[in-house]
Length: 355
Image 1 (cartoon, one colour):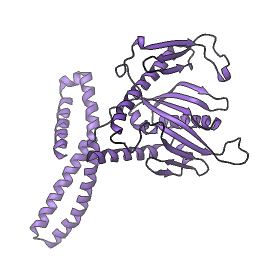
Image 2 (cartoon, one colour; image 1 turned 60 degrees about the horizontal axis):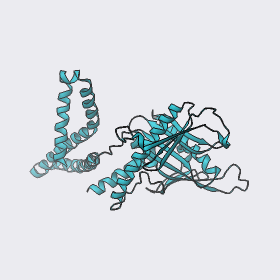
Image 3 (cartoon, helix red, strand yellow; image 1 turned 90 degrees about the vertical axis):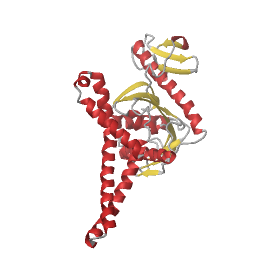
Image 4 (cartoon, helix red, strand yellow; image 1 turned 45 degrees about the horizontal axis):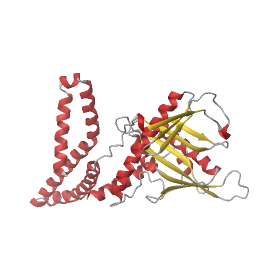
């Protein structure tokens, strides 16, 4: 580990030197690339340098104990040594985590799909609740959210809502949200006070650029039709809605939220690319998980990952056995603790696999 960190530290020093080179400064693209790399490496380098300082102090204290010439000084060194060894252990764990290869998709924007499952109208209402929860969280941390397509229900819920979230390191924040979310609460229409259980599925797809997924025009079929509102009521006299079928896989995407056929087509293609990329990743992941199944699921829609119990103000994440009694805050967009605990659990699992 130390040998690897020394090489990274040497590379970091080379980046610093290059950033002060006038030729590099005048090359905007090169300068930008090096600045990003410097920013990404800085936390690891700072931690490594703290580790080296602690290591040097441990060696000094051990030298004092070995000399054994001054009893009072030796006692102070012994006490200090215990604390330094504790610090060294913490820094070693941090460095091990930092050395774990990053998911190359972590920096990507995402497309999130939320669909009503079992539970009828209640499930549809919970789709709306989850959409608003993610939207509030995204807006609070400075991310941009855009609805791509939706199928509203007359009672205020959604059969389905698909939206994009863009900004910095979006996928790394949301990738553990994929799966089945269960809700337990008393519906407004329930007169006997009985708790109903409904389910909603969430899919988190890293947004695919054209370079990630190439779609040949001959592999898709595009149909246009008139947009319609709830109950099939015609709300558009022109054929602005778009349905794209990917012939090779059978994937179908429809968009009708915009009045412009061009905009609906753009949004549908964005969703299709994301689904094709997710399909490819799922196939690759299946090969790996056949041999070793990761503790934290990153998108298995069949897995019940979380339960929202309204009467108890409780949210439980079943993958990491985490229960928080602040559902009201979470549903209002306070997802920090949930997301951080899932990220830590995932890192610890990767560390365990690497050791």
